[in-house]
Amino acid sequence: MEKAREILAKHTTEEHLFTHARAVSAAMGAMAEHFGADRDHWEAIGYLHDVDYEKFPQEHCHHVRELLEPEGVEPEDIDAIIAHGYGVTTNEVEPTTDLARSLFAVDELTGIVHAYGLMRPEGLDGMAVKSLKKKYKDKRFAAGCSRDIIDRGCALLGMETGTVMELCIAGMQAHKTELGF
Image 1 (cartoon, rainbow, N blue to C red):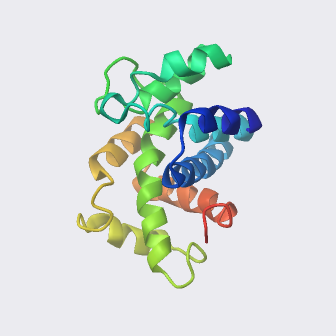
Image 2 (cartoon, helix red, strand yellow):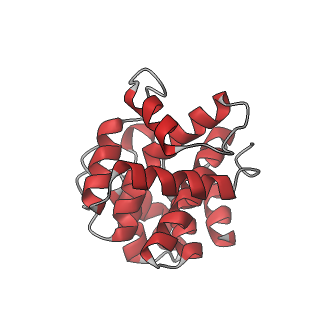
């Protein structure tokens, strides 16, 4: 994870992007546990997922390879990061692994969880899937977070949206201090 932090710091300066990186990393840790995968590895990939966003917002996911290959990031990890933009910003790599599909699903979902946590007096503590689903259905709430992408990601995973929400909440709760709660 330390290497992921070093790499992202070379290409990102905006604090909100670091907060988002931490949120996605936290959610990916919970997804890794669900799939019996390496939590630290998945958290690092989640942390790096927007490595090219600040420098290339109009070409997001098109510069991931050029930024991460020189850092020694494994090709399959680079592909997973590129795949989180599949059908949105690029069609280069399809999300075909649990890692890539999870990243695709939780990227936007963390924005909704985070926004809902900010408006609740208790933050992320005690956040229930049922109440999050109500906010999720309101297209005006966290309007910049695409429900279509989240739904496609959950379908790719073969998981109910509520299950992915539960994992995302749990992952973010475990890192609430880092996320500013």
